[in-house]
Length: 299
Image (cartoon, rainbow, N blue to C red; front, top):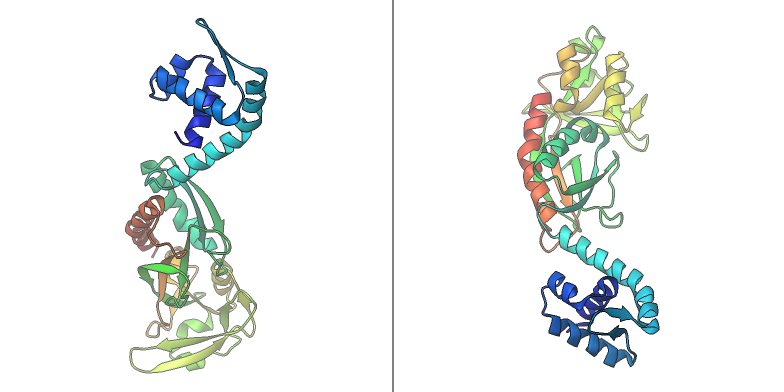
């Protein structure tokens, strides 16, 4: 009998004070319980129980030993259960990093639908528009909307392409633009987490144009950029699904429709697993099926 099982048998016997009941709970024979306790006593060189025909009781040494090892055994048992649960497809905990707006507007609906099917999986969600290091920060996976991946130390799964468009306030002078060259760096609202300018590369399917953005305004929030654009501050370049509601309500309009920037990717990133743990594989499959549906509804 291994040490773990021997200690488990001893602690249950210390609690129940009945070898027959211990045998039933651990699916052992009473004789096997007796042998396990005797073997542990031989190993320790002390008597742990006083046995009579009517009852079993702990000796002083047995009571002291039980009190000392129980906290450590409980911690070991909890760790064992957590590990087993984490390797079940329908149980465990998922720690996920996601972009702020996507997390608020899309991920919540996906999580609600997923939870209906997998109620025993719990979540810890961290929303940030920065690119987190999922290995160092101990995430199970990260959801990203970005250019094609270049990280060599993680694995990733492409979910869908994310088209971007240029938007501005209706009635603003930007509505009548014919060519990107008509935009100045002050006109273009940049998406940047570090208050940096960016360069928009736009194409009409043949020709291309590069526009400097962010001289007057930049932000690391797509919603802030959308609001600034709606207020007439300039032109923002944002994912189509991000501004769908703004377009439907008339707060924003699509400008320079013949010109488009490169598409982004909606991607799931993972630490370098040899194989995806079952709970992560379950969520990934569900996310891959549902995310494009929810995003399409927002276009």
